[in-house]
Length: 580
Image (cartoon, rainbow, N blue to C red; front, side, top):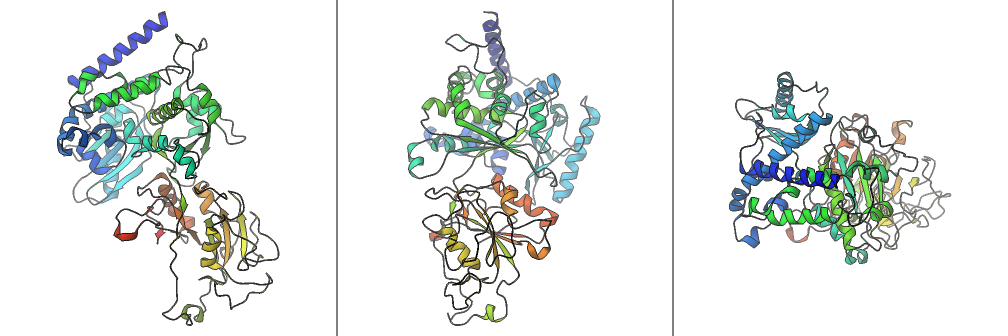
């Protein structure tokens, strides 16, 4: 009974706090200026629009009217997040993420970034916070008008940033800002029966940690041991996301909460009352999350699902690349899943987005092959004239890296005395490396064989000497191929390895320059037109000094017919690749 009363008292306290935050002036007085909701939605496309502005059509109100109505609630959500950040720092020293922007006129991105860092230094000198060493910045936007980056720091430091001209914006990263647009809908849709029929594969949620955050250190600080013998960290990750149970926990109708209530207490909507914002759709948002938490983290319903149907793995960021983030990948096994399991999945997404160590949560998009409307690439107007070959440009002494569904090694254009392996062998006639990340064979549609043939196929009847009369010889017919297999036979969705592993196909610092691939061809992608975590990872890889002589060529996709806009799909949305 004592614990029950304590919980009820905490709920009442949270409701009282939320009501006071929205209906009166916040107790937190920050020097920093937060973004207006209109400013934010003009800068970033995220789940926030669905959370605050989703009922434009149902209410009959214009977007401008909804933005005006959402203003007080937006302020309440921000005040709540400031309170949460300051309270967490004072209690256990936690740093929270903030989107920090500078839009000073006439300045370059570098100067705006320096102005932000100088503002942090000034804030540290006037606050009671400990010194923030080497504040990491993950760039979100760098335009003529504004520089924005994500920084993780003590809330009282962020609260005291600012300048006299109002050029600096410090925006707390509330949950929906961290969620990619339509992420919640996307992951639930992947559980539906139609997704099975489309061979989309099991859904994967990707939690990208904030700049300067180490996953292993974060877990170890909570006495969670990471056993990476097989890469599986499911149980410690779930404990990190939701918190540990009390030792005397029991399941049942009148049991303690499934996990600690830190998740529901950390979400603005959970403690709100319907009358707080009855002018717009907030009541539906409150009811939605209240129902999710009541049926998941406040019961034992998710135990079996988390234990048996999840697999969480950790991908480390590249230590040689500043701010390259650690990533948690959560695979959901959707076999025989129920409606309750979907709710558990949504609760997990919310828990991940509420963690102060997390900066971005997205659902891995279904990646399929592109180039299905291949056009004949000719060297001249006549099929009998090959001026590029005639000039001696045939790809000789070059290695091209390719990732696709597989290669049919029995095809005469790839024929060679012995089959390639994952170990690089420059002495092979055509394919010097074959990394079977998927199943080591091509799909029945032969997309991978087709793409490799276009790039560097060269007819050889005996597998030793090459025949120049091959009608299907590739554009770089004398080049060799280093290949990663990313497609399972009979499954449309491709399986993509970590970006560093993928783009290092055919590349190693232990070999000479000539024995390395300097181009990677990726004739695949998704229909997601956003700048995603994968696109960012491609850009990060390309930005490294050792890759200055390297180029990734990515297919734009198959959806651009009829002059349709916004059809270039991730990862072709990356900035440092060649999209075609």
